[in-house]
Length: 249
Ligand SMILES: [Zn+2]
Ligand SMILES: [Zn+2]
Image (cartoon, rainbow, N blue to C red):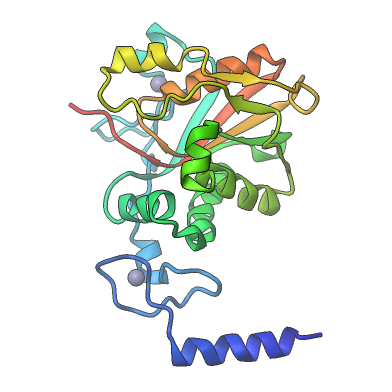
């Protein structure tokens, strides 16, 4: 009933307080309806893996590759998940947008970041086979501290767009492992082992689960989550992140 009034008021508000693009270095108004990143910035984001990537973990190599390959890491130790893909490289301005969203309460960026995630899932995975979407969970302590789980906000937006169930209840982080930046890579991996658990298998057993996170770094979090989901009966686990930190070297 108030649709026209809402649109009118929305348009009027945009004229009085034009929404400026969320990218720090841009001062253009955001011209994409309901979004905060302008179309020019969005088109210029550093998209990931357009030139071919590892068939399993999605990693790219610094060379022009147009064929499928399996990277050295996956060949040596195949990860428990079947595929992992990312939308963008964790580089400017994606790092700023993700950090605003995750640490500075800019939850209104959920739809902009879900645009990226949705594009990657549709283009890089057979999304019709996905049964359920599960966000990487936060520990209770971290959730209380932050007030929201950024990955759950992304999973919800993606679920609406793909028409899939989003399950935020069946899969938990049972140990707080998030304050571990001082640990070495190996210690960090050890710390993550056993940190996740499928506590309700009803919507997980026999399903193709899409695990969603904001940033993928080493892939350890995805691996340990996938392991716990498979232990909970998942048929297969696929992973998708908005951004990916490229391996050093
Ligand atoms: Zn912009
Ligand atoms: Zn790989």
